[in-house]
Length: 93
Image (cartoon, rainbow, N blue to C red; front, top):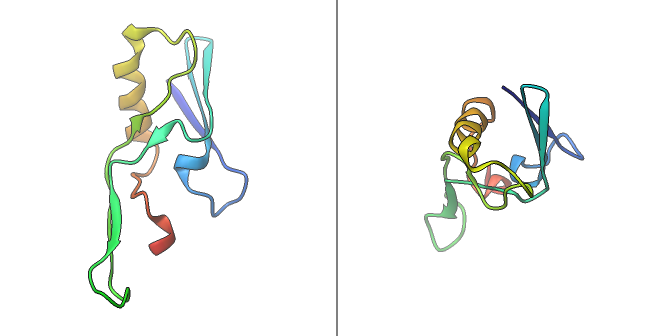
């Protein structure tokens, strides 16, 4: 199984990328915003000078149409093994 990540700009976040997954000559395209980060980001102080960034595994917010249910677990695992974990706050990094 091959997972590819297409970003408009090099500094774009993975959650805003187009993800393609190819398995046995079948390719599915996940639109921008289809991934949801398992991490979070916030400031630990009132003055917003101490950023806290916690990365976590991806989940799928929106599956491609007609995506087979029996492949979802396998594809999600491949995405999490291939793509760097997200934090939903990469702007703080």
